[in-house]
Image (tube, rainbow over all chains, first blue to last red):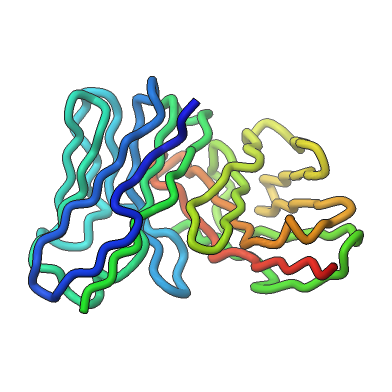
Length: 114
Length: 114
């Protein structure tokens, strides 16, 4: 079946603009994660959705970052007033939920803020 | 605070060689450990997931071991091939502080030379 799909694959934006990144998880996966991978750094947790529960937003680096998940499926990560330090690869993952389930990642969105 | 370390950061081997990648973590309170590979410009592909109660998992030429008490995992690749060239990441799922926040190492970049 189809894996995790992310769009766009690449995004170049000017400093100060808003951007939206989209993630379409594997069908039937109730858990959805957003991570950020910066050059030379490990993956950094951003936000987690599980079913209809309130999301865990504890990893969002500032209030310019927000995310939503509509209908328990597609998720959008929004970055307002982008800064150069936001440049990174944004990775989405999904799983069946539960601590024993492996994560399956999409190919990511490479964001460049000029 | 959980920290995951992968040594070496880069490894170059000739085709056909057996090799071991290392992953260490500071806190043994984990549900499981997952190994991924990442090809340039791509997302993460799940290779193996070892639950905390398990000692090892095998898939084809890959074998991953886990020694939770000593905070170590190894990924053994048999008869390496040029197609194995990628960055290999390990991640632990902690039992405390939010089990959804996987903690990743920075990876080992493997090059298999023909």
